[in-house]
Each structure stands twice: as C-alpha cells, then as structure tokens.
Image (cartoon, rainbow, N blue to C red; front, side, top):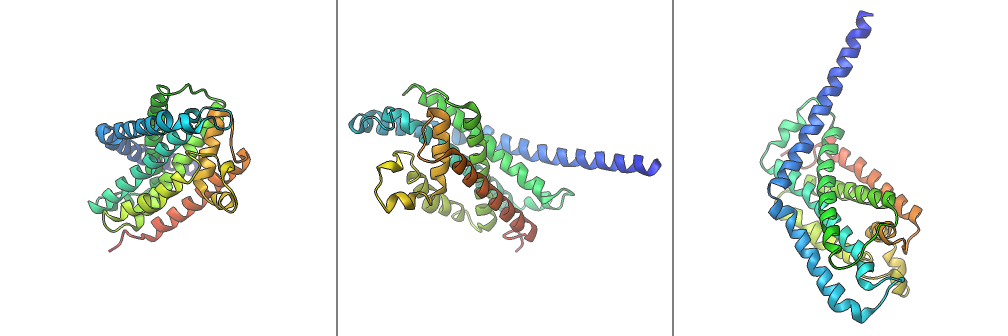
Length: 269
C-alpha cells in the first residue's frame, strides 16, 4: 500500500511537472507575439486587405463568377488560409531559432521533460497565432464580401490541423537554420510559390493537363480546398482525401521533428 501510494504521488508529481513545462512554453509563445502585435498580428490583416482590394474589387469583376460564387467570395477562404499558413510557420521558426541564437534553448532541453512536450509547446504557440490571425483576416473579409460558414466543424478542424502542420514545418526549418538568412529561404522559395499555386486564386478545374495533375502534388491545394468547403461548401478535392493528406503530413513531420530534436541536429556546435 505504501509503495502504491508512493508511485501515485510520483506519477502526479511528474504530470504536474509536465503540465507546468507545457503551459510555460505556450504562455511564453503567446506573450512573445502578442507583446509586439503591431508587428505580428496587424500586418497580415493589412496585407490581406490589399489582396481583397486588388484581386477582389479590381480583377474579380473581369473574371466573373467561379463555382457558383462571386470571385471575391471564392478567393476569400484561400486568402484567409494563406494568412494562417504564413503566420503559423513564421511564429515557430522565428521563436525557436531565436532561442537557439540566444543560447537559452539549452535550458529547456536539459529540463526533465520529454522532447515531445517541448515540441508540442512550440507548435501550440504557432497554432494560437495562426488561429488569431485567421480570425482577424476573416473579420476583414466580411467588409469586402458576405461570408457564411457551411460547416463549423470542418472549418475549425482545417484551421487547427493546417496551423499544426506548418508550425511543425517552421520547427524543422529552425532546427536546420544556422543564421537568420536561413529562416527566410523556405518561406521565400518554397512556401510562397506553393501557396500561390495551391488554388488560392483559381480552381484547378480551369487547368489543362498535365498542370492539373501536377497541382495535385501540392499539399497546400488540399488545405485550401478543405477550408473552402468549410466556408462555401465547394471543393476541387474530396474532403476525406484532403484530411488524409493533411493528417499524413502532420504524422510524418511530427516524427521527423522529434527525430531531429532527439539527435540534437543544429543544436550542438
């Protein structure tokens, strides 16, 4: 009985320690980007407003309806998703690389907590920023077009899963980065092209072969279309297929991130 009580006390102490470590990382991440909201939260809203003005108001009337919706309505979910992807990614890559650069990541790594919990804390911070920016850009979108929600469950699930996926991507980028220039290479040369070619501003049904088939290799296409289904109820991709791709990438990137963290890639000089 004494041994069982001691084991129970030890387990509760461990859970409390893990919970404290996780919440500390998440609160630190929240404070980091909310403290400088003028640089982290406001710019995406302004940038996306320009997309609505240029593509929606100026170019949209020349293009006409798409999939039964006005062009402004059709591109709104893609623009919102673009903001979510960019901010979830940039939050983790800048935060974790900053911790590496300032050499206080070692204090976290030597703490008696699993590496998976550390990864979860940083990813949760990226998800929070992605959700906040996504909500703000959605509010901005309502000034330009009438947006309804076709499925709240699908919309929320896609936002959280996509934020998680690109937070993991940002974490991997930060692990490999050795200087500040390295954290801008992937967003500039990989993320931005994939986003613009991911069906944000058009339906892949408009593409001929082989471009349509090549577009199906772009993972962002599945996220944009799943989110568009949640908002408008239309999608170029079957919803189960889109969720399968998103979840598959999350599993692979989670395992790879933990592998890098366990091996200390980019953390040991």
